[in-house]
Length: 305
Image 1 (cartoon, rainbow, N blue to C red):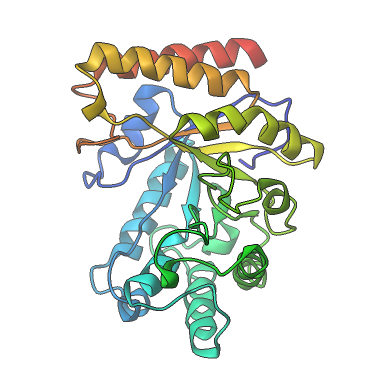
Image 2: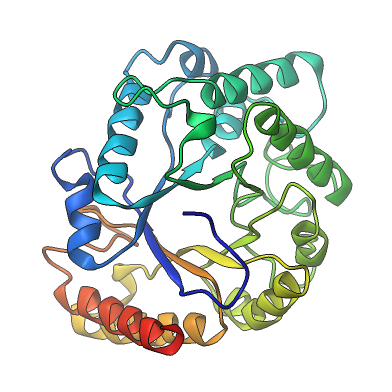
């Protein structure tokens, strides 16, 4: 279930944010031939709610993990929601502060030691988890609001190691910084080489939404493989609002995914299987896009099979 360096088949997975029907949690990716599901945005409420979980989102996550395990799917656990809750509260999560660090440690270790109410398996020992992402899409420090970003690369690196350390105290499941976006933009300050080399970044991942990051992907793959690590495109997608219809969007998807595949990545994640708008792929409506995805998936299996 773990990602390994190049040479193994490409791992295909998808985020399924907003899919509330339990019958679809595993049946939908299985029907599309996708091997795993990324669990993200688990709790989207105030900081205190991350400790009390008034909506029962962790119980729902328990059920999802049970469903994925029974279906033979791997899972990816994204912890970005912890950082995002602090940002919503106007707190900069990256600046070392005793109260902030205590909160992050409590939530991370609480999740790592949580016993699944459905299966009895502790999260930190969950065999279906391929890796745990700490906090993807960090903002560059030369744009955006101050409380949303680190003040420099060193502070960002220290934060990743600090938070990953909380998880590693309880689990040996691999950790990742989470997807880096804008790494292909000169001047963003997000030095992918340095981020990929972090000891806690056992699975370097990127998010591909624009041409600059797509163009920088082959170099990122080569760099990660040179470190003996896999390179995973954790998210990619195309906004349906930019295309006339499903046919034109399907063509663009096929071209995007083919370029990603030819970069020799180890995993490709789709954002997002669901029935929303924007970048979502609606498997009941976007039939051409689904077909284009399947075609590239089959090609990747032939190439490395």
